[in-house]
Length: 499
Image 1 (cartoon, rainbow, N blue to C red):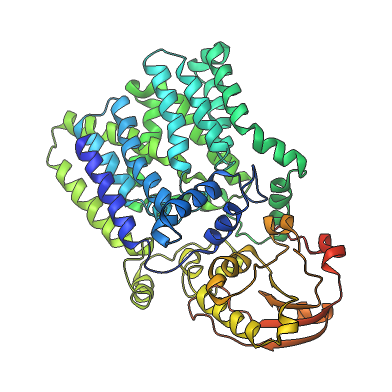
Image 2 (image 1 turned 30 degrees about the vertical axis):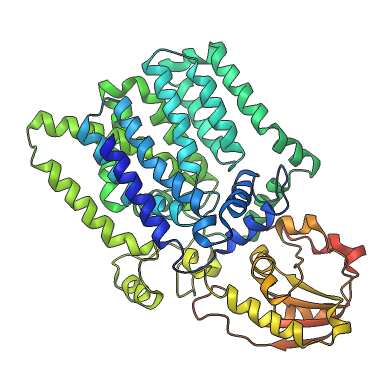
């Protein structure tokens, strides 16, 4: 375990070194804005990530390394937790080290440590629940279900999708001999603990009529996301968790079902099947299932270790480690910004596989979305400041800056202070709940819209073509709208945009 901790520390150090190479990510602006309006819930996420954003800024300032600190910590902690799961499943030294390395090289977990988003802490929380289940079974101590509930409750405050893991666990219990836990008081105490931790957010959602469900419905109805068949969904997991670890985690899944030493934990195998089915049927994004793989990787390394020892092919141990590290280094620039952007583009174009795009508006982008959305924000904010400061003082005092999405509005709020810009307004996601401030719409600087979209709503418009960045995902003109035909104070509900 000492070596595993060293591997985790190396991963943490790598993230902290490279996490300021490009720029702030679109979603991070949204979380920062929400952190400045602390509440028990938001339209598009629970409160934990915005709260942690606020904590790191208060303690360490607003730098990229600061706001991504918990992402780097959480992703590195998954390395240790996966090895702990492998140890509880019967793994010895090699299985512990190998399970840690599979996490280190997996692109999706590298991504979790590189950006502070709601995915960043998911694997840690999902696997915290899995670890509690394993201890409950192995030590025949149902009191561990209480801790399962504590972790699950925290998970519900981080991202609602952990409910799918909970559902999968219940399915697994019903289909195995571990169903005996369902009649034990501790699992119900754990469930009550999870509910109490989640309750403040649930009450917030009740108060606002479950905006997250409305958001999910609107996204589905818009057809924005790329729809995958179950087979496509399954095969895209290969790249997320790394192509060379596929035999390991598939072996781990099979081991839960068919290998006698892991048969007591078959619930986890059924949990994976149930969770995969939910996300594939609902056509969720390919990374929604990613938090579940550490337990399969841990089981797979335990089975592999036993197989190597049984066949006495010990020469395979260093070969597998070298191959995994080499292949991990090969794919590292795909997720961690170790290369200057031009060199990254050349590297990406030489890869034998194309990076999957999860939304249709990403197909024409030069960079993958998680990189593209780190470019252009400073240039956009500077361009807005130039336009805003060119207005006569009398107009400037009543000019609102309107962003069509939380990224644009959040960037103005975060980056605009040094330019003397006022806080932005937006109808997108939680920004809509914060209202139009004291603006009426007499003059607005509008971001993220088109002439066709804005012209019918204004008495007159001025258009400014500005190139934010050749790598940015969006590069729309900036408009100055005079005489907005809706009074923002009276007609604000019309601008709600939850999608």
